[in-house]
Every structure is written in C-alpha cells, then in structure tokens.
Image (cartoon, rainbow, N blue to C red; front, side):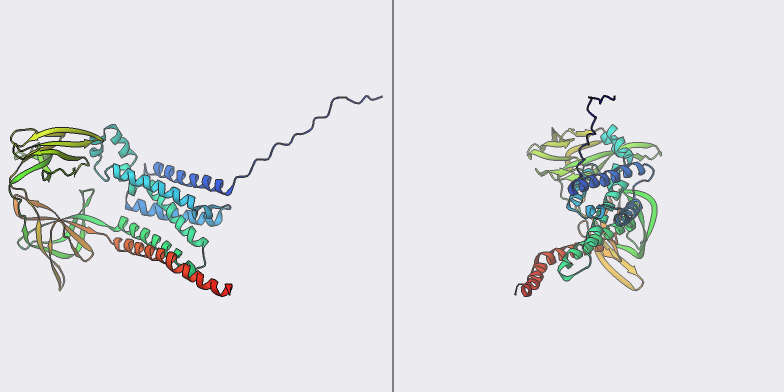
Length: 422
C-alpha cells in the first residue's frame, strides 16, 4: 500500500516582470550614449588625426550622414530622439562647454606657449589637442550630431506645406550657416603682405596660422601697390608699456635676449587686456609725481605694485614679461597706407588704417604693422573667407523662418479654421 507523501509540492514562484522603460527614459539613454560615444571616439582618434579644417569638415560631414542613415535603418526611436528637445538641449550644453574651454585656453598658439604659461597642465592641453579645440575631432563629431538632429527634425515633418514653411526655412538657414562655416574652415586663408613705397607690387600672401608663418604662399589674384604710408606719432606723454623678452640675432650673429614693446596703454583707470590674456588696471594715478599704482589679474589673483616713471620700478609678470610706467617718446598713433589694387584694366584706390580695412576681389586687407627704422614699409594682414556670406545668409533665413512661424503661420491657421467652424 503506497503511503502518500505529506510534504507539500514545491510551487514555482514567477519572478516579477521587469518594467519596461518609458519613452523619455529610452531617449535619455540614447542621448547619453550618442554624445558620450562621440566625445570618447573623437578624443581617441585625434591622437593620430591632428586638428584642422579638413578634420573638422570631413569628420562632421561623414559622421552626420552616417547617423542620419542609421536613423532610417535601426529599429527604435533613433530618429525621434535626434529630433527631440532633450537631445538638442544636451547638445547645446556640450557646445557651450566647448565655447568656455576655447575661451579660457588661448587657441592655436605654439606648444611652448602652453608649457611656459600652464606648466604641467600645458602638456595635457597640447596632448589632448585643447590648443585647437574648434578644429578637433570631438567638436567635429558633436557638430555631426547637431547636423543629424536638424536633418532628422526636418524629415519627420515632411511633406512641406505653407503652414509649416517657417519651420523648414529655419532648418535650411541652420544648414546654410553650417555649410558656410565648413567653407570657412577649409578654404579661408589668413596671411601677411609686406609692401614698400616706390613702385613695389605684391602678388601673393605669406600664409600664417595662429600668427606664425607656415612657409606657404597664396596668390592674391591681383596686383597690390603701396602708394604712400604714414605713421603719425602721439604727443609726448606717459604710458604703461608691456614688454616681452624675445630672442634676436646681434651684429655678430649670436642669439641674444631683447626686451620688445608689445603693447602700449594710456594711463587711465580702465581695465586693459594684455596680449597674453592677463588683464590690469591702474587703481590710482599721481600726475605730479608721475607714479601709478597698478593691479594685475594673474590666475584669478590680484597683485599690486607702485610704478614710478622717474626710476626703475618694473612690474614683472614673469621672467620674460613686464609692465613699465614710462615716458613715451616716439610711439606711433596710427598706421595709414594709401594703396592701389589692379586687376587687368580694373583699378581701385583705397586708404587702409587700423580700424578701416579694404575689401577687394574677396580679400579683406587690414593695417597691422610698420617698421620704425623703415618709413617706407607697411605690413598688412590679408584675409580670404568665402564662407562668411553663406553664414550671414543662413542667419537671415533663420530670422525669416522665426518671423514666419510667429506671425504668418497663426494667421494661416486661423484662416483655414474659419470655414470649418462655419
């Protein structure tokens, strides 16, 4: 006789179901994944791929097209996430961080400048390519996500109608500005033109990058002649001079350190910015004793020192940089060049001064330098930037689209709703 077992049978306990992620949670995860991946991939790859205009445009263009293509193929809400408010708001925050970084760290300077100014931190700045952050691959990939967001947002609202025209005009304006910025990054030329009076003609530009010559030359496309040059001086007065120690060859061909005037400031109580990024102001001015009390901001900390014009009392900012209160003897007040641009039979005469550039054949020429030992010499900076007009056209389209959305679309909607209500 079989005796039934008194032990109860083990019952399987079902595990509680895992709650599915909401739409908002999925968008947050996908947004974080895309932006963090773009930054990390950019930081790693740019170790071998240095910053530059081609890096920026090629990286942003290819990555943007890849992300847009994936948004049509990959299942899920990738395209909706790219076009969503959370994604674009996070992108704008990241771009703001790039803007702050590019403002705090002076861009496109020689590597020695960062090491001399920041020490060990300067090596990290150069190693991570923060010395040219706006042409680096991380910034390019973030801009690629921005472009993909604009395209995805437009495709989700297709087809085009009169009532949604403002939206598309804004997006066309954004893409036009991005295209203009890409043209500027790859095609823009900045360089120097050295001229002497007496019939000398310039036909090319010495290309520079970050103020340093690259050894390359670009053709102007026209002949530029200096007809006359003047450098009227200030009246004799006192000034605050900013000097830097630079290396120069002496008469024997040996390298010597020499103090060179880099900037000059009137003695007033305004805040002045130095070429290296520091700032100073004069807290008090004694015109009888010709003395000033200067305060300089270095690394966020103020330093004060009394400077007297009648005796040596230099304010050393570093072993190679110094402020001096002195009597100005023969400093030039302005540089003025009378030039003639000739392209075949066409000819244009212009006057170029520090705040009054000349524009001709796509080039803009600025007055930047002179040689006190050679009164016939004039130094001009030449800038060729074909993308600027496209950037401004994009801004105009954005303004037009916003006007359409806020002032025209509501009237069209009211007009369409009136017959239905009747």
